[in-house]
Amino acid sequence: MTFFTIVVRGLIRRPVRTGLTLVGISIGIAAVVALVGMAWGYEKSIEKQLDVIGVDLLVSNMSAGIMPKVFDEKIQEKIAKLPHVAETTSVLMQLLSIEDAPMMMVSGREWGGFTWNKLKIVEGRMPKDGSEQAVVLGTLAAEVLKKKVGDTVQVETSELAVVGIVDGGAVVENGAIILPISVMQEATGNQGRINFVDIRLTPNTPKQTVEELGKQIQVIFPEGRARDASEVVSANQGFRIARAMSWSTSLLAIVVGVLGVMNTMLMTVFERTHEIGILLAVGWKRRRIVYMVLCESALLGFLGGVTGVTLGALGLKILEFTPAIRGLLEPDLSPKLMLISVAIAVVVGVISGLYPAWRSSRLSPSLAIHG
Image (cartoon, rainbow, N blue to C red; front, side, top):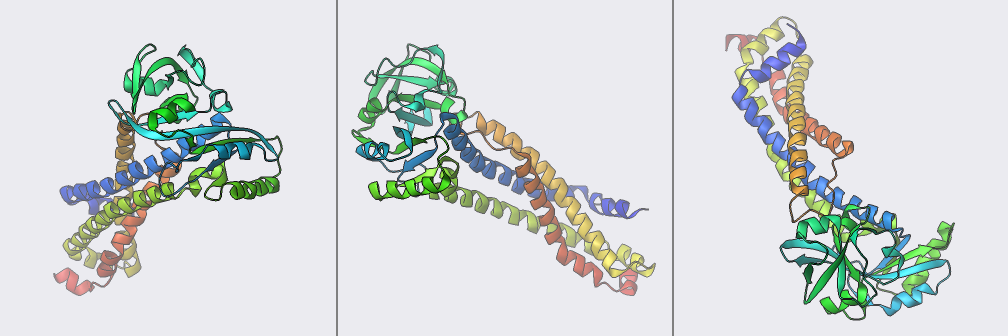
């Protein structure tokens, strides 16, 4: 009988108990995959959106929320005059409940600004000008709202005509309602207010110059910050809180898994005192007994981790197509997240097996055999 055979036999000795323990670990790891995958996915979706649009710097008054506070649109005019600023465009973006959709991105954009350039018409047309009471829908937004060209959509107090369906090249863009900023301001009661200034810099602007430009923008707009597009998500307090909450919630589920594995391994040790005594009597070192128990608990964690990753991935795929999520993010199912999740499960197994392993190594061979 090989060492691995002994390890496996220890787990299948009580299949129901082992199965219930695997369920506990799997639920914890599935929570990690689902919650962290959603948090990472939203961050990556925003980053991809900014990259597709071609934003170099993003000016906003970010607080603890996902969406920044509104501010005077005249700030954009002052920023546009600064050196090394090639183009600027104003944006008023909000997450709103739209008809049957509980939450949807609504993006009001300065008419004629570069944020319109990457939108490809799939059906219909763009608004005629910056004052037309009309919107275009991203392809995903059109599916979620069940709208086509010629329909109307209710945005807060305004009923607006759907004049086009567009492909924005990113999930967040395709899941958004896009309209001229003046129409958005009127519909939401934010006349003269924006919450983003998107900036394109002159080509090959040195990093030091970008940092100096950020300081100049802060003089113009003390409450705001100019951030590189790649740093917008990581620097936002709202996203940091969301990440912390996802890991904290996952930790609670993992703790339950730790207790489950520890209980299973303790029961296994108590039931196998006779077998362990014989192994010690025939020459097994105590450290090998410890290694055996730790291998059993690590294998239990690994199997629970693989099962949990599978369940979490399936859960994310289902969530991705729910009306509340669709169009807002593309959940992260990267190999990195899956490896981290399985590694957490194995570590949980090893930690849970430390005390049972120590207890097993303290057994007296003579007492264990006679017991």
